[in-house]
Length: 177
Image (cartoon, rainbow, N blue to C red; front, top):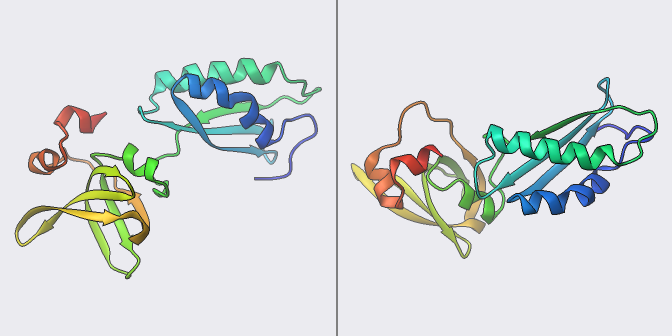
C-alpha cells in the first residue's frame, strides 16, 4: 500500500463505512488497500464469506460500496473501486478460511517441516480433516491447526475423486461451488 492521497478515506475508514453492509450481504471485509501509485488511485476491498464470492455478488457489493463511498467527501479526488475475493493463492491462516475451503484440495506444510497434500474435510474446534493417500488407499487424517505452518488451496483441472468427496461428506456439485 502506498501513501494515502489527500481526500481519500483511510483503509480503516473504508472498513468502518462498508463493514455493516458487507455483513448484511453475507460477507466480511478481509482487507482494504489504497494504491495512490495508479491514476486514478485505486481503493481495493477484499471480501470473503461462507458462500463463494461470484460475479453477481461482486457486482452487488461493488454497487453498494460505490454508493456508500460516493457519499464521502473526497474533494476533487476521483478513484477506482475494486471489490474482489482473496483469490486461490491466499494462504489459509484462520479456522474460518479452512471451513470455507471445505472440499478443496490443499497443500499443507506442517510444523515438523513435512508437506501433506489432500482434500479438506470438516474443520471445527481447531482441527481439520484431510483426506490423504496412504497404504494404497484413502484415509482421513485429523490435522490440528496449530501444527499447520502453511496451507494453500491447490488449483485443480479435473473433477475431484468421488471417494475423496464421499470421505469428507461432499457431493460432486457442492465441490464445484
